[in-house]
Image (cartoon, rainbow, N blue to C red):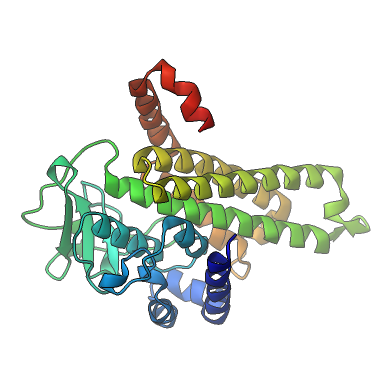
Length: 319
């Protein structure tokens, strides 16, 4: 990690330590938007980290944004960051406030109730940024208890391509979030295994638990590398869809394995409302399917590889 990213990480650590606690999670899951947390984020400029300096942003890259996105904060930070980048890439103005991302059906839209604008892919993968002031929004939520709303708009024609740029950017952002959440889950498990005493010793000394934690550590490392490498590829001008596909597949697999192991290690306490674990694992389960599940991205990646031909397979795998 270079000096700039270390500074971003330090900023994030201070901000989330001050504004993100269990009460914030509980109130957000009860339907109350965490205004203090979001105000601190916007004041720090983290929500516009990928927006150019000309438009009031930081002008940084996905590798820097990955540090920010590793948090599991119950706010539309990932969506706003990804939307700002997409609009900037298209040479469009980036509106102030919360921007969300939507698929063509505009169902289960993240944080639509709190957003001022929504980004969708129009005909021929053209970006369409629409105001939600006059939209009809039906509230809903996912298993992580984050808002996932249905939006009805007149006069917006969307694309039904399998994986457009909006979904690819959303998938990349979710990959970064999942990598961070898997790492946080691992930390909780290691701490719990060293503190929970059973049969006269910490359960972390039992070989079966050690094996499970070792598997989870491997998954956390793989997820982190997958997300970071995808961000590096996109920053270098590489294929967004291919990079997002690889990252979403690998981080999604890691999310499923890590969540399962974590609840096996913790037992019943992992589901208690007062304990943080389920705030992370429920989001991991939700994020796996959002902006395309592993199976959808695997099919897309297979088509991309096949289209490039046999002569490019090995260079693509090792490049």
